[in-house]
Image (cartoon, rainbow, N blue to C red; front, side, top):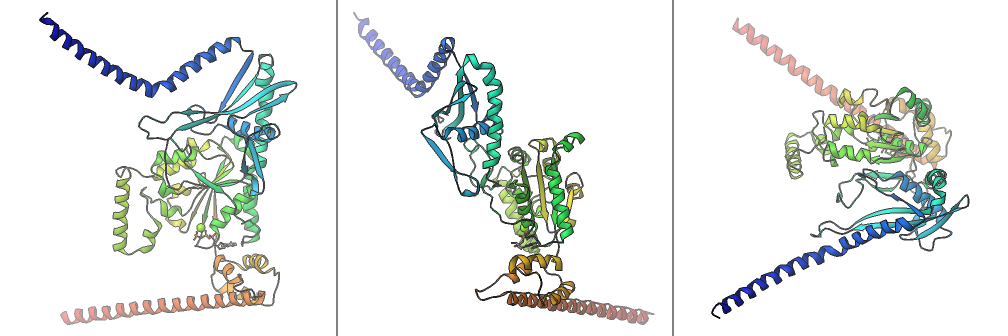
Length: 504
Ligand SMILES: Nc1ncnc2c1ncn2[C@@H]1O[C@H](COP(=O)(O)OP(=O)(O)OP(=O)(O)O)[C@@H](O)[C@H]1O
Ligand SMILES: [Mg+2]
């Protein structure tokens, strides 16, 4: 009897702790259970159903395997279904198609459509798995979309063979037809690696420049166009000689001579996408490679002002830093840069020259194929020879000051003029002084609704005269300084002689 109270107390404490641990386990169980349980049930029902069901299912996932890249099969199926589902599906989603004039319809999520192929009926469902957000709520939910094809066992051979081939082939054709060309950028913006599947963001590419509107010598223009067209048609040739199907262009020349314009014209000529790569926003070589892998074929990868984004030592720097020249500012810039680099992963993060070289012609660059890599620069002599040797930059194109031929193209585009009495004056002046196509274009632009062609031509002549006067001034100044220097030298020499004779 004496033991009783103590045993009772013991029992109560035990029970209390048991309840507490039970509650604790239950809480955890409740938090994780529903999803796990669901998965568990799903798994087994599927297996059991599989024994009895006469149907076969094939899923095509958007990001297959280690998902470096969006699955091409998925994209093809998506296109195929978008063209074939709009008649039967009830819930569709609409997106802007080519030229932003028409809407392209495709199946909405969980929508089911039927398709027929040589008498066999198949069902397509667009679906997705949503993996739960992490317990900490750190990352948002991840969606994995896929299409599921269901058909009767009887048709197994035909569906897995001929039908799928048909779907992929037609899907690819539809994609080419509906393709809206895109301009991609790797702008630093926000980046959630697990949420955002791709590192590029894009907008629709709608630049109006073409080779017809470009001011250049006709022969040079023709040569470039032929080079580009030949490249785009040489798949077999590149395969035969064992080279990756890509070509590098280096566009160099003073500012305002049409380097960026030419890239747009190239994209319009070949119907390619454009990837505008901002090297200064790339953290390191690994990231550079990731960006490369994510580019698609039939595209132009552009690195503008390559001399400013990469130093020969592999140190990156900004364009402004170079232009200032002033030592103080250079130092400030350097400090700022260092601080910035430190804040983004302890200074170890940078793209090196060798990383860039690998990007251009390393093993990874062969994936995808049919690609142009274009560099632009104002100072070709500053670039590392390794970077621009043939094989990396196969074709070097110099864009230079406007010639009279170039002017005629612009006059035709801007003023609809083939000839004019003032053309002779302009021809003469253009031989005497350098003017960029950008400056010519600006002069030929009507400034008010009343401006006519003649007025525009006069304004160009004025601009040419001004440029000529400025050039003459510069020459005079230079002569003056050099003659001053010569005088200084002469007096110094005389002094020296005098002192020498005095000493003697
Ligand atoms: N060859 C050209 N033919 C027609 N227009 C031109 C040409 N060059 C320049 N322009 C006009 O001048 C403007 C500036 O040209 P663009 O941006 O292509 O120069 P850029 O060579 O890329 O200069 P930067 O080196 O400063 O980047 C364009 O909007 C275009 O209208
Ligand atoms: Mg440019």
